[in-house]
Image (cartoon, rainbow, N blue to C red; front, top):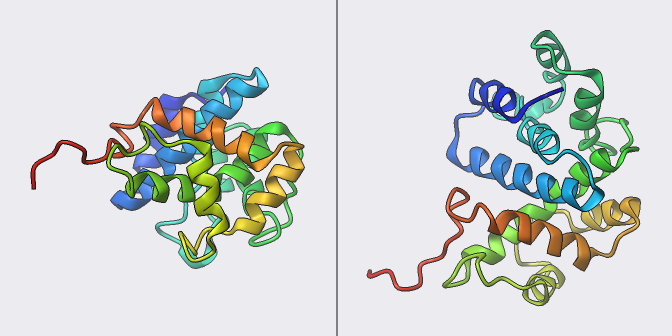
Length: 191
């Protein structure tokens, strides 16, 4: 089974830009929280989240086209490769999310972008971010405008969950790693 240590090593060889590393970590920890929710292996889901944008930095115009073969060669299981590919469903490919892991990855990829943007605006970062504040920002289409809200809602529908519930799970998962995610805020810092 894919471990987080292996996923970190594979990802580090391909992803070097700071903003992409942060995005991958956000998704990784949100996936761990989703795994807890579904009673699944947290580290395994985090590892899949860690690798979801494996080829994006080097091949942004061909995202997910350079993922399967290198990961297969590195010994990543087919089910994990399929899960990674499924987050491009309807946009980059036709690998439909079927499992809870796949549906979660499809949903949290975009969702974590809005959560991160919300947290960055707050003096205490994500530490005191509540779902109510997230929902207000989610409804504002100009806020974090590049995050695909329709895709997030479609993913929540696939999961059979309300947006607010998925967001709450992801926020809590990301809070546990606020320092690493650079989401501690700036309260009390001098200028």
